[in-house]
Length: 441
Image (cartoon, rainbow, N blue to C red; front, side, top):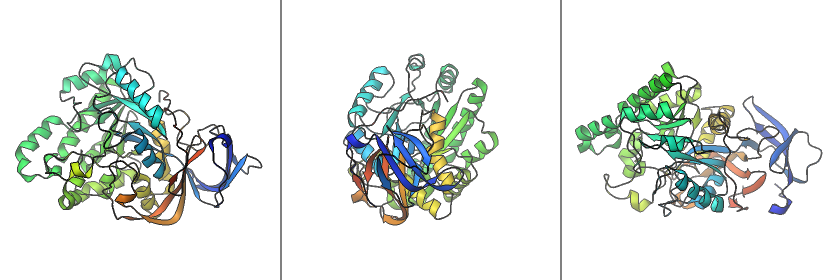
């Protein structure tokens, strides 16, 4: 492949020649003309400034990861906006949404603006933010503009944000004017199972499936009662899938994480704390139920719950080790390998990783290869194979639970706003990107 000079001052116009564009309808070979960071023309383009010949490489919209824990501020030894965005680019991710359970937590405008300042200085991909719900701050959160939604922790996890009282949750649902994104595990049941199963030190038993299922059922009922939109984060159990199959409405969407698709509770039994996360890895029957939900359209999106911790932090005893695994760099490679292996179609893949996240969160100009949309693109060499290795990870925590996994299909290039930022395993443009603009979906 021949590359033109990609310095920032000559990137107002670029034409990608003869890529194989993946859409919901199928694949089509065409040129893409980019002007001032937006897609200006698709088809047979006769002119277009600099030219990049793709020779049939796959072209998808950039992946949007709607569930990321950057760790800045408060724990930058694990991750920061620069390191997470480098990992994102290597994984074909052009935008992410950052969760609020930092130190200090993002529960008001002052903390949000500090995150915005940090991201604007360092982040190489597009970014957006969630606010965190407490029992008393919904009125204030309702006044804050341009956020992805409000994160509600119904079960305890990393940080101190927790709504463990059903009355408080009902009040939040009734009074919010934003999309609610839920960590749906019933805290009372988590405490009960912690008491009766504590001696097992088995994370998936202490955080039993039923705690997640009960929380999803409660959330569904409140969504219907108050006519409010909710998004269920990180589905992990067959019980949740069964409830949503019976009761899911347009007001309720959901996501699944790659670690719940490609690992089971057996991984925790073998690798211990490397497989410790909330919600936990589940039995094979739940893994298969999640895949069925993806294949038949019940599951709306793939999101990673990228939650980095250092190996030193993980390599302690079970009770002290933090919960969470990195995933932003490996999500598309894992899902791409599954698609190329026939488990889902490439069309379904781009919908659940690119188009649908933008729709759910009302991201202006994102998630599609169409005229007028932002030129956030991922270019893939489908026949290439590669191995996921700890030493190659760009996340600051420097490991992956998928170390050693051989995959087919490789991210060749990532463009953000029409600029080639990642190419052939190298970051080639370190200009900061920008904050995602949200429309009311």
